[in-house]
Image (cartoon, rainbow, N blue to C red; front, top):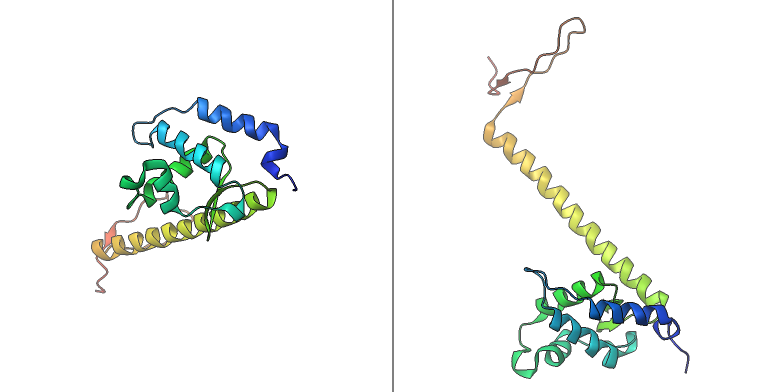
Length: 163
């Protein structure tokens, strides 16, 4: 059997072990014990893309069967926190898994980059609408004329009515 990216690299294993021993609880972030539990479950059951686990399976393993319902956001938060600690958690259409090849990591990077760009485009559109709304609410139209010899002055707003 061909060894994967993480299997061949002792440094990755050390990094995961380091991440698990240096977990700190942020007041608004996920619980360190839950992050540790997620990492342990994924090391046992979700190594590689072919062994990806759906969020419900992960929630059942991490939180127990009684608490597994409606924990998808919690699993996402735990996965994000583990990634920030250097654990190569990937996600795709089949679920969450520990990336074991550079290709897996590249795919995740592409997916997350694409999502981030879409979010930034959404923010850009909202900012554009915000400016448009501001102009409409305040109805100010600035008459800007430039006289090269005159000192620069900020024009006063006009109400937009033609007189």
